[in-house]
Length: 99
Image (cartoon, rainbow, N blue to C red; front, top):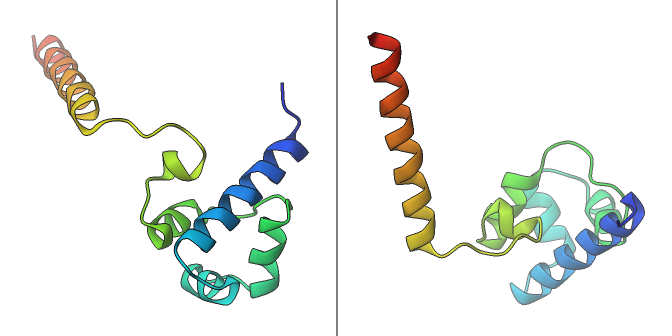
């Protein structure tokens, strides 16, 4: 099992790779998510991320939060199937509660 420090370092590397891929500067990303440039730079260097900037970061990089966190990207079809299954189960629960 990875330590928290190892996970922070991996996440920092992922942030930097995403930023470079999008041809953005540290200042551009920091400004877009509303943190100090030094704070964002520290995140890229493995410091623990504070607050909840994940949605903003994912938006800046044009990816999902799951992808930002290093989870594999789900295929759209599979995602829609899962959502459909959840909706069906919710309908069943509503019917059961109303009976």
